[in-house]
Length: 244
Image (cartoon, rainbow, N blue to C red; front, side, top):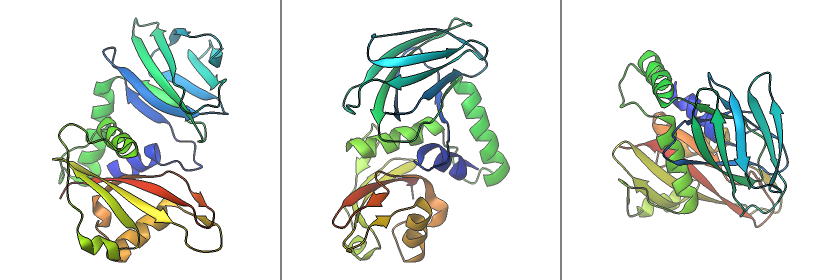
């Protein structure tokens, strides 16, 4: 089911989910990786032969048996991007831009775009009976990233907020809408005297059961920037949902 696939992919949970991106030699794939742990990079149905980058920015370990590599940043500066170029046995070349951040290590799996679309379309056909237009992993990821950066992607417009949103469990501060998806940014503030731990399940449950903007069947993915909030701290939650 598309909902479960995207939530597993995008949300920073303790489960070690993989980040799946389509191979595209014409563009740079940008991905956040763990600052401390090893990030595994694999090309599906292929083997990585060479990795080119700037020496001193990262530590690289290779698995020649499986044709995959493991990378760890040497800098803890989250503003620094690591640029890599991979070449494979099948003759593919892929440029990567890796962004060190505070997150658990996740594998980066690079796949042929056709295979990804076939997988998602198959899931959509089997579990949703094509009652909705098919969604692809990359477009949801791009929308979540745009919400994080405060950008409006091509094909989206920012819509005025309804005053009724002030009465919802969480404060909606931004809503951008396209033909298939909408991106919502919520602000969560800890106004108590105790530390709060946020979870995707609790956020979704409260949003949907207490008269929020969305219905449960509309949500596609959500990402909580910071799950542990000390008294007085706040964080943003980014939600990708089906457009009305």
